[in-house]
Length: 384
Ligand SMILES: CC(C)=CCC/C(C)=C/CC/C(C)=C/C=C/C(C)=C/C=C/C=C(C)/C=C/C=C(C)/C=C/C=C(C)/C=C/CC(C)(C)O
Ligand SMILES: C[S@@+](CC[C@H](N)C(=O)[O-])C[C@H]1O[C@@H](n2cnc3c(N)ncnc32)[C@H](O)[C@@H]1O
Image 1 (tube, rainbow, N blue to C red):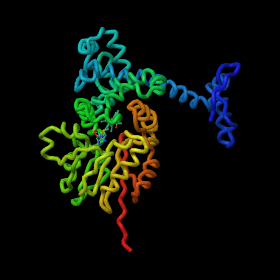
Image 2: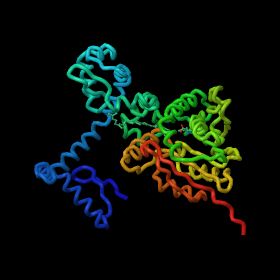
Image 3: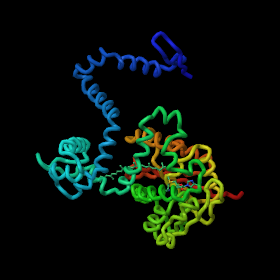
Image 4: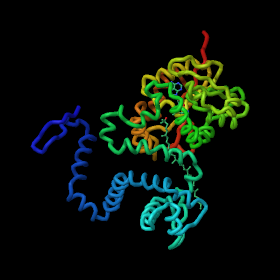
């Protein structure tokens, strides 16, 4: 393990000498990259210039990330995105709608254009850009935008957040991580967010799986039943039901509770209802640490009949092209939430195997950055 030791230059990390060639190569490369003269030279040389330009821009985007998020937040909160929905507007109109001085509106409009939220129509008019227009097609993104103030406030002091996980404000938003199952107001608040944002992923999950007429699906931790209802619409010959904490089940609106079988209980301590040959866990496992996840998978295994199927759907770490959504975004989100972590597909495979499942497969989704799906089967018992 590296340890901190005082040197004449202050603190330095000392560690055992790297053994592999790869480790030695990395140390050599990093010494080169931090050399100011190498950087100057690389920026001038035609061969390395494009790499230098790209890496400098990459670093700047990381540095600026919080500013981009807040530009999106301001565009939403000040009504800029609403003002330009199906409209083309002048700067005066935008300034009036957003209740901003013209110069401030100009700063916001230019910032939003640069990140594709808005688009310039001509020198005097603006409308939504491709990303701004996409937000209007996804009400779940708007709910997430409102919710993110909590995460941003925790992330304003990341060192404090990492040292004092228990003090994060996001933790209070999800009382079940502390085993607090008695706050109906909090449960209603997070269930509404989950129901809204479920629409971002449900169709991708349902496009990737198939339920037949003999499928009886229990959506464990299924909130107020949005996924179970959408699954029933998509596969009308299957039966679907939801299992969640009592205060969540109690908050299912009457018009929905009549159409859906709902079971209340604690998935870690109560027996899961039997008679279902498919169990889904949608955005559940990443909320919990390894031990409870192993216990939950074992309970699902026990509740399923031989040949029964488990479906795991959530964003996963290590997703190609979306690496930072997994380990960076969800890594910090779940850290601030106070439990769980994003897992790589291979880790989930191992945990499923450990619980006794077989035939473990990934079912491709259209947008893996948002959600990925793994299915597995409880093996048929072979009598000798
Ligand atoms: C028409 C012409 C000329 C050209 C067309 C070109 C073309 C084909 C363009 C494509 C347009 C298109 C279809 C765009 C689609 C855009 C989409 C689908 C955007 C979707 C965005 C989704 C986002 C940003 C989702 C964000 C989700 C977040 C932030 C989720 C957070 C989840 C959390 C915090 C979950 C918490 C649960 C817990 C506690 C971890 O368990
Ligand atoms: C992140 S939400 C996901 C909800 C839903 N599956 C979705 O994707 O929209 C986690 C869900 O797990 C439920 N949950 C947490 N702890 C639970 C427990 N011990 N027993 C049953 N449900 C629980 C929560 O009430 C919540 O509805």
